[in-house]
Image (tube, rainbow, N blue to C red; front, side, top):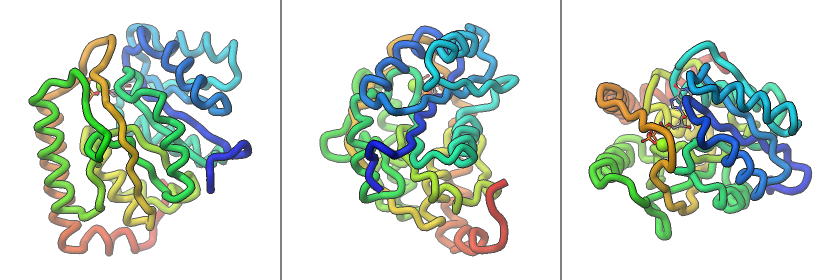
Length: 254
Ligand SMILES: Nc1nc2c(ncn2[C@@H]2O[C@H](COP(=O)(O)OP(=O)(O)OP(=O)(O)O)[C@@H](O)[C@H]2O)c(=O)[nH]1
Ligand SMILES: [Mg+2]
């Protein structure tokens, strides 16, 4: 399905302390996708991001806030947005970070790709993509992780670790959310893998990823190590066919 006039599009943005970014980001999203509803999943940000979104929401019916009681992690925030998209019958869910690392100008290319694919990835590592002002060490680690993911999971994509993606909501209904084990960064790779197991086709469109413009970085070394361990665990299970068999057993959206 192409993202035409009648396509119900939800753009989701998870936030934790993004009050310097969120209002301007929503404006940019609507500049490129005026028809989109925007769902902000906020984890009771101490800087008042959630309250600010409530104020914006009161003035614009396209803006919605999902408030959670405390910091529960980006992965579960994206799952909450996916469940919201499924229960509210959206056609497409497009997810992006709040800190302008995922420029809204790529939304049309992501949506255009949905005429051919079930999941479109905003990709740093295909021709035309890249990173700007990102510390060299972070790009090296990201490229190495993606090399490992290509080896283990054979999904045929170059960038499996970014969150800038568009999903076909009808296909998300086939995904085994109940089997997800990731709590941190490895959620992105695992989600893509579970989409693939659910029969989704995956595509990539180039993006230039920009380092966050404002607000504090929340990168956490301990979480990065734990995510690496999760990727290795799932990677071995994938190569042995264990995950494919598990995903065929009865179960479903939890
Ligand atoms: N709801 C929610 N959002 C989160 C949480 N952690 C991060 N986010 C949001 O998820 C997005 C990505 O997080 P970032 O902090 O930008 O992570 P990053 O890009 O790896 O690292 P930096 O940009 O250097 O901080 C941002 O929009 C954050 O506000 C969380 O626990 N809950
Ligand atoms: Mg960021």
